[in-house]
Amino acid sequence: MAVVNSGGAVVGDSISKHRRSGASLKGRGNFLRKACFALLAAYLFSAADVFAQQQKGDIAAGLNVGLFMPGLGAKFQYVLSENWRLQGDFTIYSPLEVTGSNINGESYEYNLRRLGADVNAHYKFSQKKVAPYLVMGLGVVNRTVANKKGGDTIWEDVSDIGTLPAVNFGGGIDIGIGNNLALNFELKIRFIALLQAGLVYRF
Image 1 (cartoon, rainbow, N blue to C red):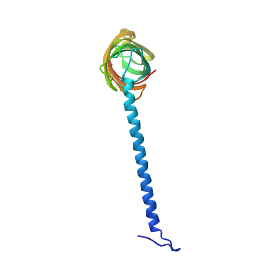
Image 2 (image 1 turned 45 degrees about the horizontal axis):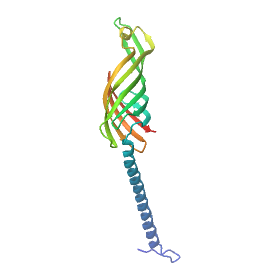
Image 3 (image 1 turned 90 degrees about the horizontal axis):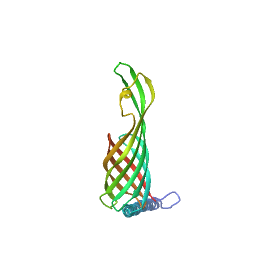
Image 4 (image 1 turned 135 degrees about the vertical axis):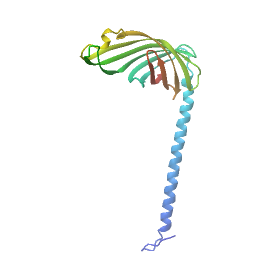
């Protein structure tokens, strides 16, 4: 319906045209956003295949974040063949606050500090952008007591404080997200189960 203002101009049709124009621009904006997202997804999808195709001599480095046991670490990878690679990593875990009492009834508290270093072999089952792999290797775990208060702790007579050897076994999955970048999630078992998330950049 057209409305005539005091000057005799028809304003109803003009308002309707502006609304249609605004709706058209909004529709175009949505289309452009969807198109950009689709292009980005297509790029990452295709580029992920490039990362998955590892070759002998490839090297990569990245970071690990502990999930079950909070911690932060660094890792380095060297590719031996299409399916095999070596990974060395070092992790610093968050201090664990411990309280309790000893056999004499004396209370104590302390921080248990933990470091871990590993050299593992990874066997990749495929060269696809989402590729599971097997983990096996050796490592060392260092545990120290700090900020101790109160009586003697149970650790004073137990041998697993200090540096201990470890055998690692587990599995993980690589998820390629670009030509040189991948996410990975890894579960390995030594004394306990350790779940880590990581980001790797291939040089």
